[in-house]
Amino acid sequence: MHGAAGEDGVVSRRRSILVRPVTATAFFDRASELARLQQAVESLRKGSPQWVAVLGSRKVGKTSLLLELMRREHREDTAFAVLDTFEDGPPSAELFRRLALRVVDAFFARELGASLESLSARPDEYKATLVESKSCAKLPRELRTLLLGLPEVRADMRLAELALRLGERLATALDRHCVVAWDEFQALARLKLRAAGDALRLARAVWQKHQRTAYFVCGSERTMLRDLVSRVKSERSPCSRTM
Ligand SMILES: Nc1ncnc2c1ncn2[C@@H]1O[C@H](COP(=O)(O)OP(=O)(O)O)[C@@H](O)[C@H]1O
Ligand SMILES: [Mg+2]
Image (cartoon, rainbow, N blue to C red; front, side, top):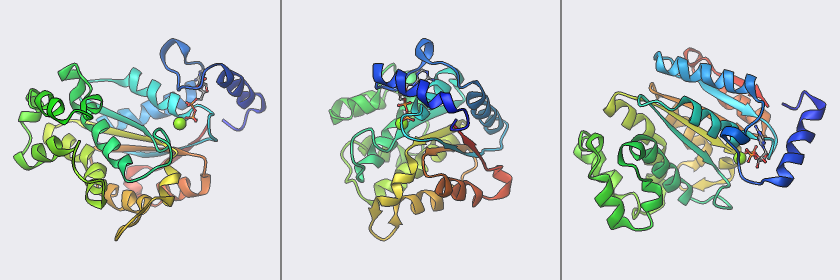
C-alpha cells in the first residue's frame, strides 16, 4: 500500500475521524489485499495452508482488513481468530490468554451465541457456557479441561504454547480449519519468555508443523516478516503482500 503516494494520506484523514478498526459499510477499497487473503483462505480449505505476511505501517488499515476478511469469509468449517499485539497496551504473557480465548470464540461463539472471551472475567459463567457447546463435548477430555481452565491459568510459557497450538488442535479434533491473523506481530520479538527465548521464535517453532491452520502475520517490520514467512517450508507457499 505504500506504493500509491496519495493512499496513505487518504487513510490517515479517515483515521482522524475514527480510531477503531472499521468493517462492513465503513470499509473501503483494499480489493486486491482482500482478494489475496481470500485466495489463501480458499487454499486452506482445500488442504494447503499458507502463511501470508501483510506489510504496512501502523494505522494503514491492517486490523480493519483482517476483521473485514473474517466478516466476509465466515463459514462453519473455518474458524477465524484476529488479534493485535497492542490491543491491550504493552504486550505481556497475558496476550496469550487473549489469543487462546479468541481461538475458543472462533470455534464456539457462534454455536453458543455468546463470547467466551467476554465471559472470561467471570470464570464460573464462562465454564457453565462452554460446557453447553455440543462441539466442545466432542473434544478429548484433556483438551476440554484445558479450555475450561483458560480464564484462571497462570500466564506463563505453558499458556503461550497452549495458545499457539490451540487453533490447530481444535481444527484437527473438530475436522475444521483455522485462520490466525495477527497484527503488529513483529512486536512479539520484544516479549521474552523464559526458556523459550522470545515469543516470536516460539510462535515460529510451534506453527511450522501445522496442517490445518493458515497464519496471516501483519506488521511494519518488512525484513523480519518476510524472513519469517520465507523460512516456512516451501509447500506452504509463503507469500508476502505490501499494503
Ligand atoms: N479499508 C478502510 N476503509 C475505511 N477506513 C479505513 C480502512 N482501513 C483503515 N481505515 C481507517 O484507519 C484507521 C486505522 O485502521 P486500523 O485497521 O486500526 O489500522 P492498523 O491496524 O494498520 O493500525 C481506522 O480507524 C479507520 O478510520
Ligand atoms: Mg492494528
